[in-house]
Image (tube, rainbow over all chains, first blue to last red; front, side, top):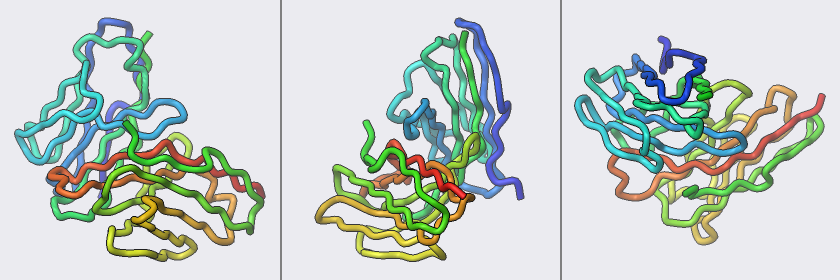
Length: 113
Length: 113
């Protein structure tokens, strides 16, 4: 049981390049989330999904797009990377019932030069 | 914007001592959760306390919640070097359709052997 798996673990991009971060969970969770964590700070929600085919904006959605074509996968895309998007990105998932913890992947460390 | 604020931002103690971290938040909540993050890893759920609960225990962890003061505390008793990590509180608001959490900035705990 792998839980939440994020790929890749590290990536360096040049400004203007695009890329997709993949999150996969094997716990049959309905809800999935993408966060970013900047040095010395907590997590900020980028986008989230309450089920296959649905997505919604979080606190800091600008510059990112997401897709949830399959229940187990949640993709985060950067169409034109900017240095301000240098961060550590975390994916999480949880059940639909209330009062549930979120389960996190180990993150993707992304540097934009 | 961050719902929770942890205090202190950093804490250094000797092995065997107790560590207390505090979290304050701004709006009404459904539950409050504490997570641990080891360096370079994702967040791991420690304990969830519901808004109608005042205290919960899990092993060496004790969490209290005071909704009148909008604050919570995490106590780690008899700390070990392995407890060295960052600790985050996160709140879930009532009527939160996506089970979303808002995280504080974290407390960095160092336990010296």
